[in-house]
Image 1 (cartoon, rainbow, N blue to C red):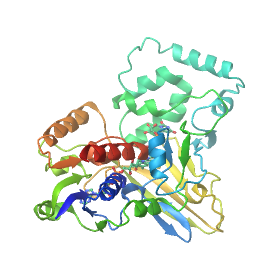
Image 2: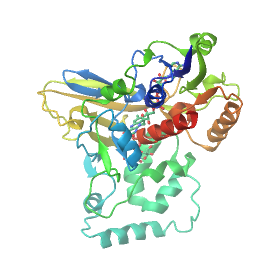
Image 3: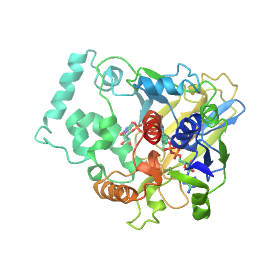
Image 4: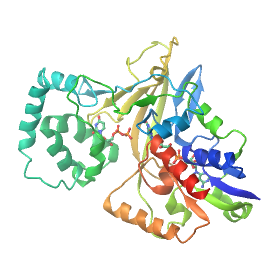
Length: 366
Ligand code: FAD
Ligand code: UDP
């Protein structure tokens, strides 16, 4: 008999299992994929670690999360400074003085602020933005919105920007310094020996069964443990009885290039125009300052979520948010099952949010 059955060996399940195991609880982790790690898993090919499920850059402003994660891995000094390729021209992200300088030929923060203010003025009648388009236009005006945001966003989400929640765009910072560091957080980097090492260290000494789907024998698995932590999709746990939750998915095209050792000179380049079918190209070696004589890139294509695709981004519109809340209310009636993680909470959680939430759930249990 186990104390906890943990469904899903992603970051949430692994952190929860680590803490419970440390406190003497017996845990069994089951994972339907052929490997642990969930979406942070990477596959090593000739010493280049390929972020198989999208680029992952660790960043946090939470000291307790940084302290916790550093018990299991050290980090390198990678800082994310993505580029945006708009109709053949490259601009720096996040939107900062380098971007404004290239876009408008302005040199000072005063000039840039004035330019943005002028452009936003037209939208000052929108006092309470009701969708992403209104939110973006009131924050940064026409030039930035139409060049960098509208087409990228519609490609990413497969829907018109004026039908998307304003909250999606709140994450894009405007910065009036010549600083290309995407994240404001004081703690950043890529695990020195990769994300797999982090996960393996978290799961050390814990029984993990991969290629094991909870739904293939849920009664049997439930009978093995006193309590269950479920980190899969919350709607599937309840057999979608309140309707399906919508997700956006991604398709990845990994390409090994032997005719160059440096394809794009940067780890992340976004493609912001509608005509390019992918949203970004990742060149993995740059996350680790790799010196290999070849390179591996990944093109990331946004796609609709079907039963054969992985669910990646929750579609947090009103209908789906309400539905997710209804599932959470239903879950409260099953105290022997805990729900957590991106899929279990139907929430956009960065890795540090995921770790913080798993620590907090574990502490509640102890
Ligand atoms: P998952 O990693 O999805 O793990 C859940 C696991 O449960 C999966 O392995 C799944 O196979 C398993 N599972 C599901 N159902 C079952 C079942 N029935 N039986 C058995 N197992 C099951 N965060 C950052 O901080 N920085 C970034 O740069 C960043 N980039 C991202 C890029 C993309 C494209 C995406 C999608 C996310 C990104 N994130 C990033 C977020 C990060 O991936 C998450 O915070 C984290 O991986 C969530 O972990 P999780 O355990 O909740 O979910
Ligand atoms: N976004 C955009 N242009 C960009 C980058 C991002 O319009 O060049 C928008 C887009 O709507 C996206 C959101 O900002 O869904 C969040 O992007 P981010 O890269 O922070 O998130 P990720 O896709 O990596 O989770």
